[in-house]
Length: 489
Image (cartoon, rainbow, N blue to C red; front, side, top):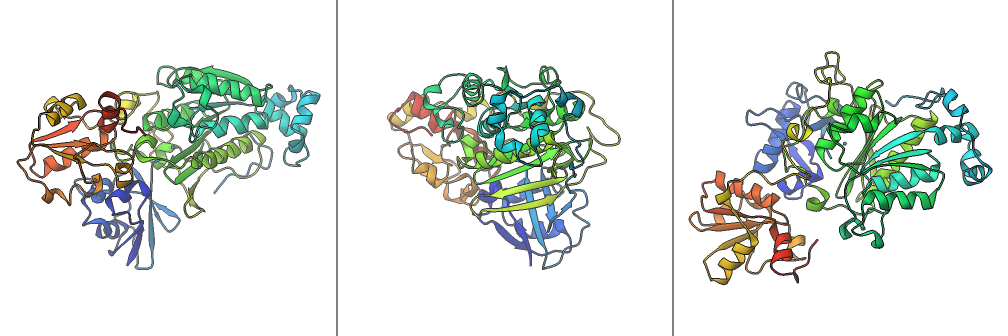
């Protein structure tokens, strides 16, 4: 039987299984065979017409298989198929080619204090005084100062990158402190960009920080990015990932990419002039809700430190013009297994922005492109009659109404906090356990924030249930508005 590796983001639909087995003559048929009995998994991987979605990269062993060709690529029982989701051979630059010219670095001088500070760099034959001057002359733009942005900013500043641009509009929250190490407890409630700037200057006062306390959008992205040598993607949402990619391609700049999910991470370098871009790998964004945010899915606090450091190394290599950057290679990391895997990537000649016949020549509306609006992904659109506030829910519970309240979070979340009288049916089990529910009961569904529960509502609706309501804001709103003794997370 052909083994199919299921990414962590979809294991909620596979009963937690990381590997499934299937049989069939081609990649598509083998994957279909492996997931056919799992409705949620099948719908995440295939369209209604049975075509493999473009929201995943598919590898046969370590060879990338285009979604368009997966139905023709033959497999055997000994083969291994790996699905790599969106979470945003190397080129040898040892000949001195990098993003900083010799002429530009020649105009940069180091003080005696800087020479002492960077002495461990200067005695590296691959760096030397000339390389440190390149770092001093470099301008790097960081999109985000959160989980990935924290180690990126700290290590690039410590390394002596002369100018760091920071783009962030958020404020520090208690939940950030588990992983966003550039901020401290005393910074809670303060703008992240202010906190990050102060920490960078305390670490290395020689670094110039250019703050952009604004959302990175189609309206300002070109203005913000145009004067920087390298753009680093430290974002956590798909609209900004595609925007960052398109800005990098249109400006001809390298885009150092990293992404994280729970215990897994990815890193690569997109540089359209020398290899693929993000759209070459992922022509389409995933459907809204398929890949949860850190707030919904969780993340091991150390993980963004590891991936962010990998991104920082790639940026420094590009500045110095040394080594083999991750252009045309995707490096994945699994913290639980403590292993790395490398996949070769190829440029798509039909890519809409870096291909031979470009169709994207300017920035677009990326939230519309990704099917979402607003700061974060909203719940699946429901009618007003399908929603209920926590205040109304509490009133109806107090009145003793006969309500069936379903909690679609995971068991480990249910152990943290719960609304009294709820029934736990995790989202991945809703379809198969629908038979446990009565069609004519009034069923009220909640999760942490109202996103997963909206998905669950639509699953039950597709099975004929009609009297359904989604709790707006989920148990988080319950804690804020009804019962503050219920822990928030």
